[in-house]
Structures are given as C-alpha cells and as structure tokens.
Length: 407
Image 1: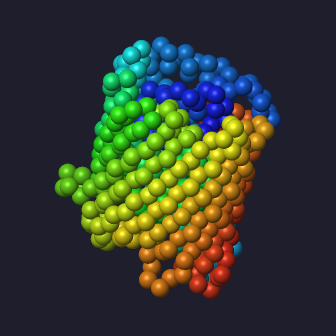
Image 2: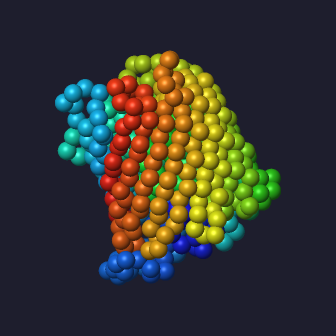
Image 3: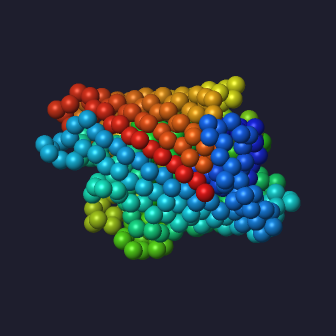
C-alpha cells in the first residue's frame, strides 16, 4: 500500500496480521523492516540496533517497537473571542508482539501488547478535539488527545487452517480491522476525520472484545466482531481497562464482507462493505449514548506502485456517543514520491446529525517529508466548508505540523 515505503517487501502476511495498516503486526513490520537506502539522510547509526532487534525476533519470536508522534494544529478562527486557536500533543507508543508457536506452519499464535501515553503540550487542548472549540464538527487531529499511560491493546491473535480462519481475543481497537482504507493511519497519512474512519459510525475506544475472520477463498473474506460499546473510559491513572459494559451485554457489533486479489494485498487493494450496530450505554461522563446502526462501503487500490486512491460511502442512524454524521462520502488519493515521500489529497461531504445544520465539507492535503528511515515531518492543511459549530464562518482552515520518530 502507499503507506508502505518499499511495497515489494509488503506482499506477505506477517504473523498475527488479520486487519489493516493500523494494527500492531503491520505497524511493527513497517517500522522494523530494513529498506533500500534511498533517503535524504542515509544515517547508519541505528543499523546495529535494528540488526539486533531482527536477530532477537528470530531467536525468541519477540518483536518490539517504540515510536513518538507529535502534532501541532492551529485553527483560523474560534467560536469565542480570545479562546485558544491552537493545540499540540504527543503520542509515545511501545508495542510488543510474541509469536509463541506456528511460525513454520503459518498457523501462528501471537500475543500483542501496546502501552501508550498521549499528552497535551503547552495547552489544555489537544488537536483531536480542537474542532469543538473552534468550529469544525469533527476531529482535525485524529488520535492526538490526552490520557495517562495505559495498556491500550492487549490481545491474542490465532491463525488456523493456513490462515483461512483467524480470531482476535482481548482488548482490541475495531478501527484496526473494519472499514479501513490504505491511508487511514493518522500518524502516517491523513490527519483529519474527514479523511480517515467514517464519522457515521459510533466508534468506541479500544475495549474487551473479539474479532473472527473467515476466508472461504483467497479473494473473499468475512469478518465479524463484538466489543464493549464504550471501550476504555480513559480514567486517569487506570493502567488497564477494557470498558465497563462488555459483560453487561452493551456491545458494538460489526460484520464486513470484502474482496481482495490476495489476502496479503488487502493493505494495497480491497473492496468491502460493513454493517454495524451499537447498543445504548451510559458513558463514563454520565451521559447516555443512544443505540445506532448503519453501513459503510470502502474501496482502495494501489496503481503502478505509485498512486493510491480510495473512496468511501457511509450512512447511519446518526445516534451514538461518537457519531457525527448521518451520511458521508470520502475520496482521496496519495502519490508516493522520491525518498519515500508522500503527497496526499482528499475531500469529503457530510450530512451532520445536528438538526437544521448545513452540510459540511472538508478538503485535506499533506506532504510527508521523509528525512531518514526513522524520522519524518509532515505539514498538513485542512479546509472546512460550512463549519457546523461556527456558523459565523463560511470557511475555516486548520494547519498542522506532524513529526514521527521510530526506534
């Protein structure tokens, strides 16, 4: 997929990988796999470290990765005069995967653990929620929020019958598996909500649940999952929580049917349709999240190892704690350039779930400048038409600067 700098090495399905480009198995594969040296700054000081990590994985079945992501976002207007128009946040992630058995047969059993700290920098606001105080009814900095250090994901992935059947059990993030396109990772690709997951879906936080994937043929797959409807409530200082509702039967349910040329190429080429249904639940802040349901269809394709367009149509009931829109259309494309750089451009239309509000439009452009194999910097611009929460403005902009370092 276009998010993978050297796509020739990305045609395999790594142990524990059954989802999309945001799941831990895939992210660790990208960050840990050596690439051909075509970077602006071919720094070799980290070579020994990555050689040792590869040798350690071969000997023990354990792989790990550390990365730090930073984003600064500034809005062109605010709702209240004198209110802050900017926010900054960082994300520190430590991921570990242990393939306990099945490496030779391909029927692997893998334990994944991800520890995460997300924190604001210099402000009491974060890029993820800056839209609510400035005007955009959406998330201009997806994922860049604040909560104390915690185990964000903890799950077992089992692959069986030559990877025709697989399941995930534990604390999981449903956005890793359902309705993804190849440019969905907000610390690598598009940053705004109008270009990533669908805003018509009542996505919960990572929580207790399970996902099952069945492949009746090499080209077709069926995936279903259930998870705590709210997921981790992000209570301060709570190291591990998968939510309060799973064992009460308050669930998010998803099922997806998709077509791919081969299963390993789902990062590159995929057409899918997903249906979701979420139960009503009482959120950690005391409010009630309404029940909701809907569908989303997505397609992405990688052409000539260079161009990566995607398209998504989605519609829902408009209810739910994390639902923004009744209907939405997203389209975008990225181009892989020299030195593994990437240029991305997207646009979306949304009918919001706020009564009598005008339709909201977004456009986003980014350029990912890859300086070394383990450091990149990405300027990003989002244009919002008819910002739902700031009716004094016909148009708003959000400029962001993002960096990523991997170790």
